[in-house]
Length: 174
Image (cartoon, rainbow, N blue to C red; front, side):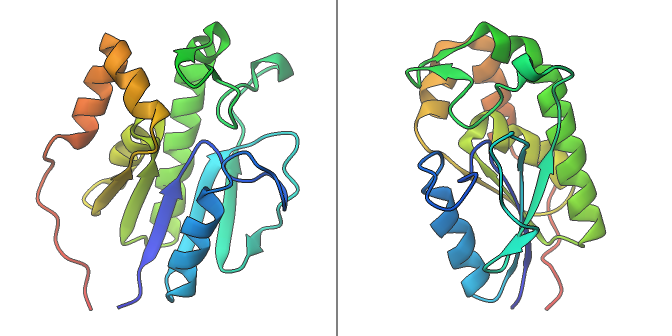
């Protein structure tokens, strides 16, 4: 069965050979190589040189920052030592989450997605949960997200909400 998968992430290699989020590329490409249509939704970054599609992965980058100095969401820019959230990240988080949710929801709706896949429970899992509607939801944990969720009450509550049972999903036709 072929699926249309919308993946949400805060990091993906911005250009070939980039080390930031480098483990995301083989995840997305391997899902595409299995015959599924993969749409990667991620924050825009000034260093991105990706085309619209590469190796079966379609890219949908969203802008969220009103000024360049607030372009800190994702790509290892929002945390100090993968453990503490920077002040600028707290400031821009509402705009980045809203922009990510809207882009993911829009891509999922237009492409008739059958699965939503959020990377990092915070923020990708929460954003994917909000955009998923009745679609099946997959959340992958990558480490720093779990640590941050354990340290901050508001972040912990958001993570719990992402994992809470939602309305029953109807399996996709096929």
